[in-house]
Length: 230
Image 1 (cartoon, rainbow, N blue to C red):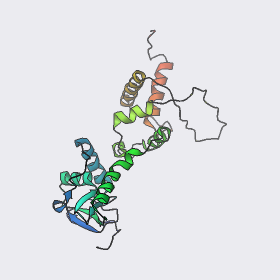
Image 2 (image 1 turned 90 degrees about the vertical axis):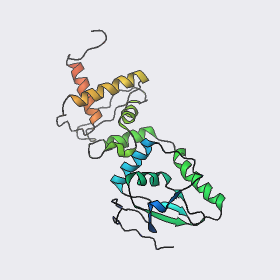
Image 3 (image 1 turned 60 degrees about the vertical axis):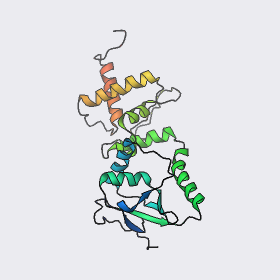
Image 4 (image 1 turned 90 degrees about the horizontal axis):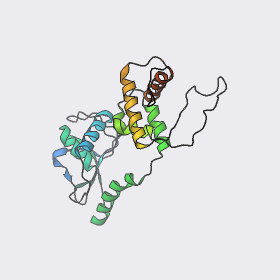
């Protein structure tokens, strides 16, 4: 087996930075998708994989079985590489005791990620921190509509905002709400409209959703907004 490499580089004919350990750069045309891989990759998923590879480079190699010669891990990435017109990709050739072990690993690799449970509160906080305009949020795997829906589907007990002593805290507060599906859609639409109205002044808040909600609230409290009773 070739010596494992861990040197960020852009091998000839790849056009993509390699940031992972790999045993060799293999020719895409020579690699064979595993015929027993049950995962079906949609056009949208492949486009997302492509986008991530173009931005991040290769963060893990494709795993090739020395037993069968098939791709055990990375079939979706190989399909994306073909669509991107890449000539070579980083691979790692590995031994499997028998075909059963090989297929079991193929299935487990597909299944493990889907078994995880998301902590939505933590996820919302992390996404809020990222939503500064510094990166394309699509790179997180959350499309705009999904992101906006997640950020407005809150559920906590209602409580008054605590008064922070002067000088304490960051000056930023996370506020959560309980919304019905219909209300969430209405809030999403309002946030998008508020974002597109005009650039935000220097509010001290880098979160675009927070600025949009503040803009909506300001319009309402100043008398320019309307309610169903008007």
